[in-house]
Length: 233
Image (cartoon, rainbow, N blue to C red):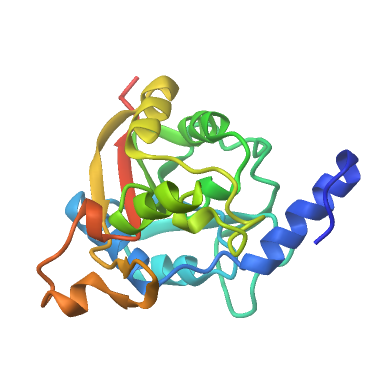
């Protein structure tokens, strides 16, 4: 992939990255989101922020708890067979026109690490979320043993090496996520973990399969979830 130079090339660079990744995440990440939705009985209008191929969007539709399912992505065309209330085409490095305080829930699943300014993203999610509404963000867990070892030995977190670039460009740890959410005005709720984590040097094997599922949580999960609530006005 060529190096971006100038606004036109940057737009092309972002589109190539979007096409290359397709916005697809693992079922263990979607299951983590399912648990958060169930735990807080979330419903109403939901926005899949960075919908990609629409895998999470289909899951949200299938729950039948949301009155409106809207999806937004840089990809211009709604995936075949996906029937959402609206499909919005938008570069998420920029603001989505309208929809101020519109959504009861905004989900950014494996998106924030693809974007250039996480603080802008947090402010945008705050604007889109209604007072009393919720947001859910998932992203690579850079505090796992595997990721910390990669940082120590190679100088970068494990999901931010050349194999993930230029898709993954913004690495965040829990403290970063808490700070940007508080700065944007949210009340953070807490973190969840996938409880699925690859072994250092053996990415096709997990801690869980060798520990009878006893190794879980922060140090043994490849991805995390943070949820937050927008205070009532």
